[in-house]
Length: 114
Length: 107
Image (cartoon, rainbow over all chains, first blue to last red; front, side):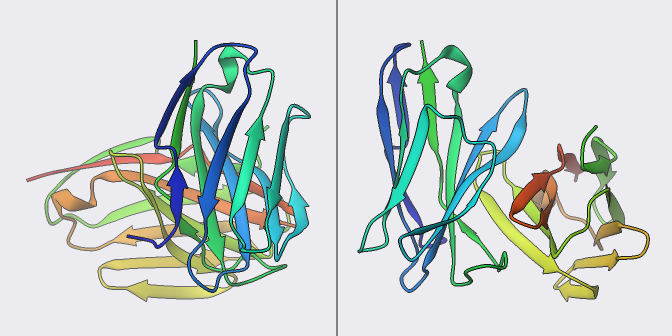
């Protein structure tokens, strides 16, 4: 158990809908990262937050947004969903801010868009 | 063109064999990670390297910054090592991942 929790585990929704994925980092970790893993594209970095502030941005679509709250949990919002958004979404946390320190991954949320 | 290339894509080994997985990258990096993804989907970070060599149990990771190459070695492989191994690098504020090496260790 990494200490990182993600909810929900599975999510099935229709095209055009909006969903929110939640992540709670390990106790004491200030950085949260979001990743998408799809069958055709592999793992991709989406975005990093550190102590509530956006720190780095990867291949995150404009339809997606994220935030980190004062209690350090983070949410990834996916809107106007398309079939191609079906993927595993992982969050990870680390104590390190700017450098990519050792990361602890959550179990993932499997999103299926029908 | 992928910033991170791994080889081989698939690997089958007999229990006890010495295994090497290779990773080459084309960008300047501040750190390289080796990740392990189990069949159930969970991801574990095995190593973070910026130079030299690290060892943890039967796993050894090396990196050659000049050649932009890293290797992950597994000594005395065991069926529980069966997983996908992913190489990932941080370059500036970006993170790039290899497509993974699927390892199967047969008893």
